[in-house]
Image (cartoon, rainbow, N blue to C red):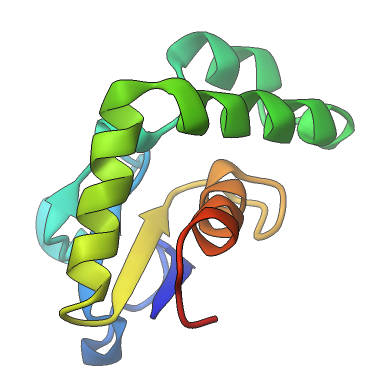
Length: 122
């Protein structure tokens, strides 16, 4: 099983393997408090796409399409996706992100992409 969770939420043993999927380290949180197993910067949107999107709700639909294209075509992102899937076969995986909005962020797109393109428990 794979789920998403904001890095600022309390981490719990039920999170399983915690993977930060942001390109930048979340503001105001220590490595100890984040309690991460992995930091997969390469699966995050490209810097240019992230900067263009700027978490603006009006751009989310276009951002989603562009990020899905990156996920499908970028070799480094594909390697991260394969590792996430391999880990999810061992234990529950929580993809951790720093964005404020719970449904307008790249982790939502990433989880949807994984669930659509890979065999996963939803």
